[in-house]
Length: 163
Ligand code: ADP
Image 1 (cartoon, protein in one colour):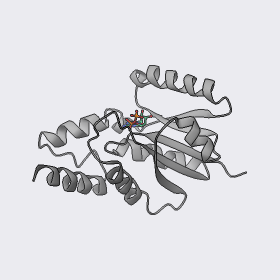
Image 2 (image 1 turned 90 degrees about the horizontal axis):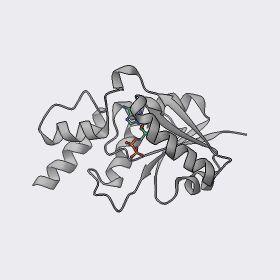
Image 3 (image 1 turned 120 degrees about the horizontal axis):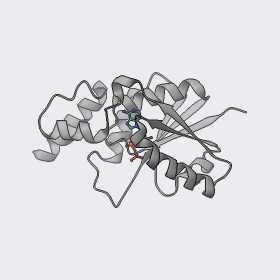
Image 4 (image 1 turned 90 degrees about the vertical axis):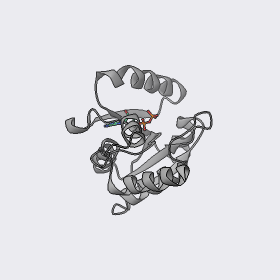
């Protein structure tokens, strides 16, 4: 049976580290759904629509990758896609504690779903969406941290916000 995996996250904004995990996961599974979380309680940097558009542009050349919004419980979303695999990325030991707690909670909720961790390339291990947001807001050059499409969408959205 073809295996679909779900890679969930905020992707606010997507970074080269996220895209590295997307690429690695796409080699391991028949198809991959990148699930962009809608968190109504949290003020986001980019809208869900912009984050989805950015990720779609970055993954256009691979028809096995889909990008979708999700809200609510992750395990419900994963089940609704007939998937049994959640992919998460790990940068450093500091990610481990939080990721382990979430993975164990999800296993309690849905024992049939496995969480698979992929390590980022070491050159992206310092990279996070919050680093990108800070550098961008302070007017720094963040082009080495995100794909070109993401840079364009950040400039479009933040430029429009300030005008
Ligand atoms: P969340 O708010 O769900 O943690 P993020 O968008 O911050 O969403 O992260 C989504 C996933 O990508 C997480 O598993 C996170 O550890 C991973 N991730 C974030 N940045 C990187 C990176 N530079 N390299 C590899 N994985 C990363």
